[in-house]
Image (tube, rainbow, N blue to C red; front, side, top):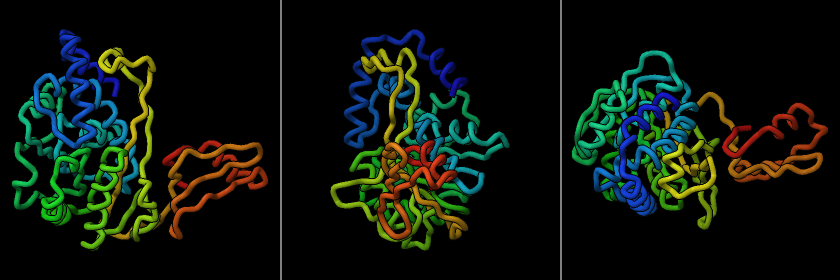
Amino acid sequence: MNGLQQTIDTLLENIDIQKLKKASQNITAHYRDGIGLSSEDEMLAYLIVRLPATYASIKHVLSKLPSQGSILDLGAGPGTVEWAARSIWNAPLVITAIEREMQFIELGAQLGSQAHWIRGDLTSFKTFEPHDWIVFGYSLAEIQDQALPALLNQSWQAAEKGVVIVEPGTPRGYQKMLLARDYLIKEGGFVAAPCPHSGACPMQPTDWCHFSVRLERSYLHRLAKLASLPFEDEKFTYVIVTKEKPKNTTSPIIRPPLRRSGHVILPLCTPHGLQNITVSRSQKDLYKKARKSDWGDAL
């Protein structure tokens, strides 16, 4: 992220601070309501207050893919998926980015994107060109539920290996992800992560599956959000659905582990449902691993 952050800082070195703060407030409201950005100021502010967080969560999710490959980024924004993918894989990548807003496409070019860009509304496409991985990075929130089945069907048909969905770690984001997860399973897909199975989600109606990643805040980020802490915790929910059945499954830690004297309690999602597993010091290697584990890690 360092090189990308330096480019962003250079682009925004003359930005009006008051406009930045106002646009940041608007972005927060839009983010909660699943509404897209509506002004140039908001798109510039997005580079400061949202791109680092979405980059961190998308990188976390892409690192769990069973293999690399070509990527079709649907609802690409300024190209966050591309930057996350290139930070994981050093090998040359074929990336196609579809984005509705011309301002985001132009920002992507200014940031140094090497993707092939296509301008268009996702719901206006009849088909997508085949790619190994079809990725929705915080883009399903703007899709109406009635338009979701057709879009997911087109995405599934275009996917050679699978579909990746990352959404905000809110009840709204979880529900949107869950709709997509259920649809893709019905299409014949297999959940590769984070779930250890392709059955119904065992979460209670009052709960939702989400994870967290911590990132450092830049000076402008703290200024825009009137924040004192030098870091931010981004909450996100996600699913990876593949064409082939996963060879191995793991159980994700769905809440922060509870570390006690002589034992660790791990809240897990297992093939048999939600379970709290206690790992004691007598279990030696497993105990050492449990002590170092964190929310979102797999056991």
